[in-house]
Image (cartoon, rainbow, N blue to C red; front, side, top):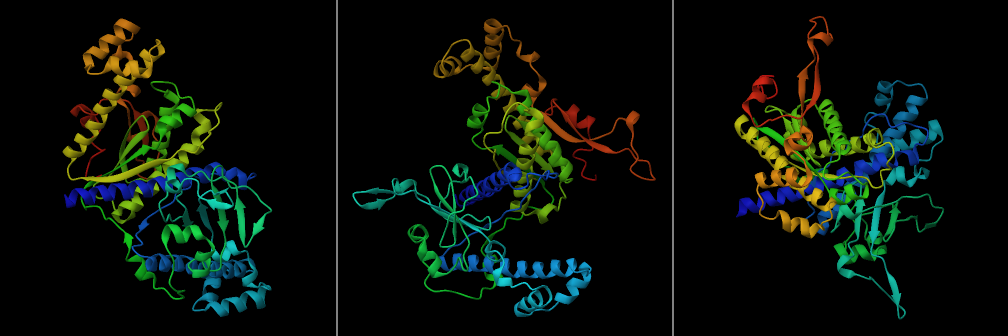
Length: 483
């Protein structure tokens, strides 16, 4: 039971971590044009995330202090570095000038050489930013109350870290320009939520915490202010899971709330070829970006990415591997949207969650992939019948009752007899999913990689049977442990 509980906790942590970084990546790409209207986003951004468990208020305070102090140190160093470079120094010369300097020396350098008072630089540069979500309040008989206390989950999100009970899948922050300032807070409009962007001299101080009563109510209070924190102490609470060596790593990502997403964007039922091709195109981009991925299989709103057995990608840390793959996939989904849906506006940024699982042998790995393809067939056959019944006039509940207990052969007969559809003639992509892998170029279109004249490999997408041995015999290089 303890092992089962541990695995469930790890899976839940992975979902939280990946869902947040996925949504952040999607929103980043979506909002790019709002801030860089004249600049094209040329490369898909990706972010790495990890979890630090703050078991007490003291640990939380230490973490916040560490991150804000690190922001200050890094920004002061970078400000000095780039001012020196802009004045004519090389990067190496600038680094030599700053080597061993302290806070005060860097302040004097900026003021004396460049006339810059560091303390007057924008707070966002020196102190970082944190987003504070507070429960919406209303007045009743002269008093203020949170309308739904059980649903009011305020959270402070500094430096892309989530604290408190937050439901990231429901977080939709719309940042707009505002001329209204109050006590150092820039008001940020968000439908149905009270969200503010805060710059503070010390976000881990008692005074800052006390100014925001929602934090006291939800998380507690700080007993006293702290000034010095050892990063090693905070890092000891980091949730780090290193995956077993010499095993195949599979990162499986799933769309979050994609039923609603597909309805909102009017995807064709039961299968939207363009939506599936968009997923496939994102998978190709992921494999081209992360060369340790040797194979991927996708169906509907999910994709499984297989990393080679001896991969040292992100030192085999599960959080790093999962977060960067999910993040990059999410960014690509938004960036490629117009290429597949030129007439449709992307109304809401998509998000995916993911987790990593290790498989010790090729045989077990192939069993996993076979399971996913069997599941593809079962779900697609059911969905094809379901949506044809609905299109014929039945309600969703009637269609479900009609199909309840039916087997594969019965569903095939239903499609033929009632709708004239031979299930086996439907597109292979719908019935078998998509396999994405590295393959050699056609010899007639050979490219030279160098003096040896070797043919270059490329990522291909095929819709084929990966359960049978014949596929793996035809492509032995995919799971070749010596590759």
